[in-house]
Image 1 (cartoon, rainbow, N blue to C red):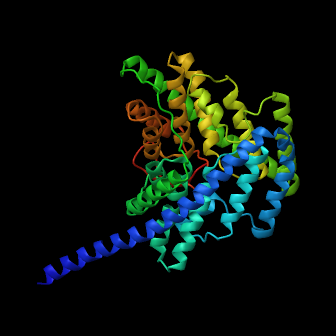
Image 2 (image 1 turned 90 degrees about the horizontal axis):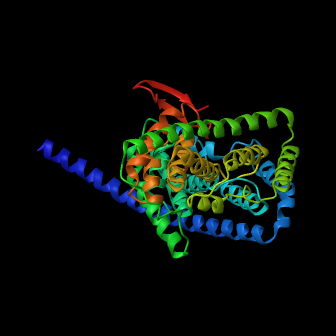
Image 3 (image 1 turned 45 degrees about the vertical axis):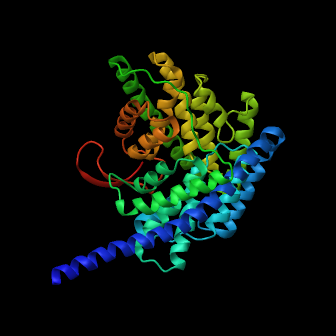
Length: 418
C-alpha cells in the first residue's frame, strides 16, 4: 500500500508541475510575444525611416549621448545587460523591470540612427526581464525562477526571429556550455511557440531563406564544407576578440562614457561617408539576402566586424548575433566560391557556422539551420556546426557564459569565455 501511495503522489506531482508550467509558459509566451512583436514593428519602422532619410545617420553621436544618459539615470552601475540575464539563469541574479524600457528605447535609437547592431541582445534582455519579474510577482522559488527567465528569453527571441525551436534550445544551451537543463525544455518551447504565433498575427515574418539547393553528399563537398567551417571558427574568434579588445581600448583611452559614445558614433559616421555605402549600418539584412543569392564583397565581413565592434564598445545597444549572421554569410559566400562551393551554399554554411562559433551553441545552431534553410542541407550544417563549435575554442560573445565541459574531451573545466 505504501508503494502504491508513493506512486500516486509521484504521478500527481508530475501532473501538478506540468499544469503549473503550461499555465506560466502561456502567460510568459503571450507577454513576450506581444512585447517582441511591438519591438519588431518599431525596429522595422525606424530601419525604413533611416533608409528614406539618410541625414539621420549624422545624429548617431547625439543618439549615443541619449543612450548613455538613460543608462546613467536608471542604471548608474552599468550592470544590466545580456550578461546580467545569463547570470540570472545560473546565479539567480535580479533582473530589474527598468531593463525593458532601457533596452527597448536604446536599441530603437541605435537602429534608427545607423549603429551596427542586431536585435538578439534586446530580445534576451526584454524576455529575461519579463520572465524574472513575473516569476517574482507569483513568488516562484529560486530553481523555478531560472526556468521562467529562460522561458522569457525564448519568447521574445522567437517573436523577433520567427524561429521558436531555436529560441527554446538557445535559451537552455547558452548559459552553461556542455550542460543543458532539460527541466526548462517544455516551458521554453511552449513560451516560444506561443510568442511566434502571436508575432504571426501581426503579419511579422521570421528569418528564412528558402530555395538554396543542396546537391548530393560527396567527398569533395564534405572536405570543402569542413574547411569552410574551420575558417568560420577563426572568423568567430576574430569577431569576439575584436569586440572585447575594442571595449578594452575605449575604456582605457576614453574613460568618460558620454565622450566614448559621441566619439564612437562619430567614427561610424565618418567611416560610412568614406565608404560611400549604408550597407554596414543597422542590422544589414539586405546584405545577408544578397549573400544568399551568391553576391558579396570580399571585404564586407571585415568591415562589418569593425563597425559592430565600434558600435557596441561605444555603448550603443542591440546585440551581436545579426551582425554575426552578416559576417558569416558574406564571408561564407566569398570563401565558399574560392573553395569551389556554390556561393549561396557557402553563405548559408557561414551564416550558421559563425553563429555557432560566437555563441557556443551547436544544437541550437543545427536547429536554426532547419528553421531558416529547411531540412535538405541538415547533414552539411551538422558537420559545419560541430567543427565550428570545437574549433572556436573558449571564445564567446557573452562574458558571463561558462564553458562547463571541455570541447576537446569529457573534462570538467568550468571557465568563462574569453
